Length: 387
Image (cartoon, rainbow, N blue to C red; front, side, top):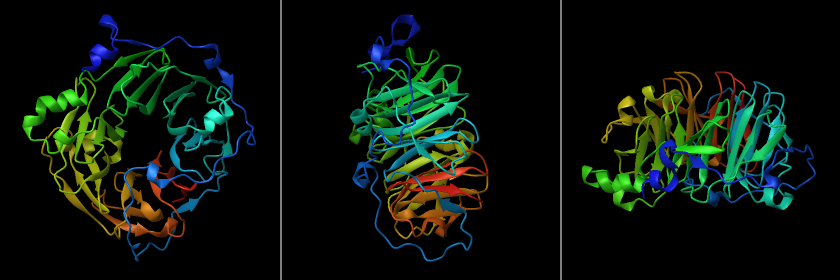
């Protein structure tokens, strides 16, 4: 069903959020680490894709460029964001919500005073984003939290029952503005701190695939109704991967629908992202079996894009994320605590031993500038870039 009919209100195309209940008003965040007991561990099966078994590569760089940060939790970590160079937040499974005031060198547990203690532990906070003192957090079961004072207090924003899918991502744009994505590929924008949301994608992915199925997008007929690994470029462009990993989609501001693309390889897609967070630079792709590929900007527009293989000795471990520290230096992370470094713009990667003796998997790597980067994983593993 077209998203316009389900969610837009008249010509304004605005989604009116339900009225806030009294318990959803702003409440101070308590700095009481003892309020709840962070539950140990989390099932790796909750994360997709599964990490393939293998043998860790032997060659390693001599200098360890990353160090592990001690944390008061052993849960899986999903995202990290900073409001200032020193002040930031870390979110994860089992209600994990940590704060730093020293640039990520140390972290303390925080709690949301407007969430019940037992309720909060049941949440999986998956995304956090900040800009200019304004922050957003999304999680599962469906929850959206908002702050305008750098996290001193938070407000729970009610979500419409007509929202297609669950919130999967959020980007703070400052000045009460934000973008939110859902598991079905919907993209919404707000200009008034979440009171109203406007649908930016006017056609559901199902409808798009039915309309273009004859164009030769492999795997379109097997679409399961959801997408994952939604990534946003600095210019507001998005890409996402079909939940089965058999094709990917792109969208840019002003488009009415997502554009589907063939993956150009028989292997399933594990993850994708923009080269240097810039759609004009092209995209990177990781595949089952620990393989990688890279393509230019045409991967955003061509249904049959041309990808070039990336040389990486993964030893069979799945590669789950990649990010660029500089235009030439990129880092990839994956199963078994594996890390890989590229110094040629992502054309080749070499194994890095910084996390070699750390148990668990690394799911996310994120650079905020050329000196500030973190890798997040299971079992409370947080790696900090130290150059």
